[in-house]
Image (tube, rainbow, N blue to C red; front, side, top):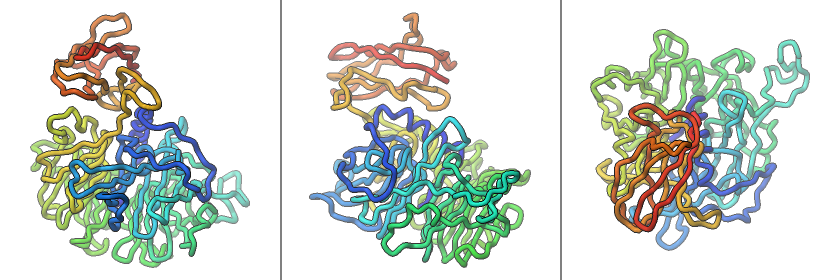
Length: 525
């Protein structure tokens, strides 16, 4: 499965990741090149933003009872999830991030094969629309060692300063990492392909020993049409997803899909006017092996006849049909909602569509659908669940269904009847600090990040949380709840009598067995 986040999605995911930064270890950056691994991977999930879930191509015994199962792209690097025969109680993590010399920021693209792992990174900035590209990294030994690759950019040779056109390159160069995020990665027979909004479609020929990818000039710009590359003017040159399937390359742009069967020498244009896809903003593509179908997340772009849905082709991209249109949505949930798909997952003929509304499931290749809402993903007997809007990744493997969002990783082995939620949370007492309670994200925007979580420990019994403003006037008193002994968290949506509270400093009191504790939070919308 290949997933890519469109501009606003990327911004939200990485801003959310930044708000969880207090849960992640401190990190440092490297300038690039081959990495000698001296720092072991983090033995935990270090971010709750999960935007990619990719199966390991084969199981590799790593320790007694544990095998390599899946790889995760998160808001803080890439994570290998290890599991044993009983997945409910045998799970371990190995997380690689900037602390291990990978790119800066969160994962924006992830590709895993039996011979190589490619990953790309992005981080938020105060300029640009979609942030900045943090480079790429690859591993040929399933994560034991990594090689960092700087974000591909163009060298200026002979620039026409009046137009920005480089006479030697033959196109308008991309000289910055701003708005130049590698969203997606694909492998064809001869090339590695990457896509970004500012950097466009680029390819790099396979190197025999994979040592020259840090030569950014080796990433050749490929225009997906007959025009000179100019993403500032041509929507078709702003690329967001790439897929190699059925012996063809498919590139999703802000103006539809482009298909090439000759490694980018010639192209066929697929858009809402000539091919029946629902919309020309193509934010994700994936291949369903069981049905030989190509699926695309097709958002509305500029055309008045375009609409948000997902589109499917079973003949190599020649013809397309739209699914999860307004009629199917109304039939499924009883009212109209807009589908903004972010990715796909498959289990034979069953299709999963990751969306802001939740996880759509079709057992019959798109004819009928069910919706698993975020609020349905809860762990029984625990406070853990999905509270934030948006599902970004899904994978069905031999153990069950894995789902990723802004609130962690969820697993169900019984078709959603019960869930296990795996989340990043720094223990109250740990080598980095020792506190009685903390709130996260903090500072906090209720309208951007959903509920805040108050973490605490209890000896068991009743727990009550009261929030006060800076003048120590009571704002809200949350309902009392009983919790077993251990560390827990409770959530608050930031509202008083239905209205979001004003910006400012607030205090909260947790009344519990073992002693009451106080904490502070800042609301900054």
